[in-house]
Image (cartoon, rainbow over all chains, first blue to last red; front, side):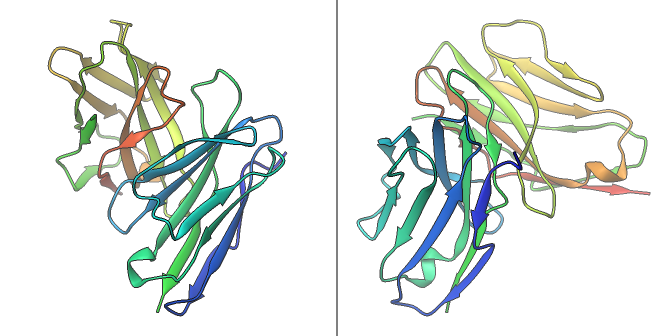
Length: 113
Length: 115
């Protein structure tokens, strides 16, 4: 297993376009998390899944954001009608059941121009 | 709501010397977990060390140790014998018990190591 994989690594999009990011967690990890990290700041929690169920969403996750984990494996994060303020690094992490340990992916850097 | 504060945006240390990174947090919970994560320029976040709040003994992992002061809500990281590879952003993070594993991060401290 090569760890948590995120695709793409970089995405440049025009304001108003929709973008979708993918995260492939470690296979036996049932929890999956999305965070957003802006330049010079710590990651901020967006949402998390236990298996296919989305159990918590941050108020940061506006109605333009949606996340799915349809089969309890990979997850997608979609941003509709992107705005310049959406420019950030989007980090995915996963953890096994009943564990304190996270494994982070390398992130997807989004630039909205 | 819980908050985590790192008041040192940047720190510098000479190779082989010791450096301490500060972190304070605010919570009304009595049981929780605290972490230090390292984020090298490649951007993948790596766990450095973890402390359970119910444990009085400070955690240690090789050259990394913490000073956990529960009453003061302070959680500092000491790096001994600093190496060039220690240069990175360091984040302090809080996790409540039974909160689904969500982490609350501080703003980070950028550590540079001088040869």
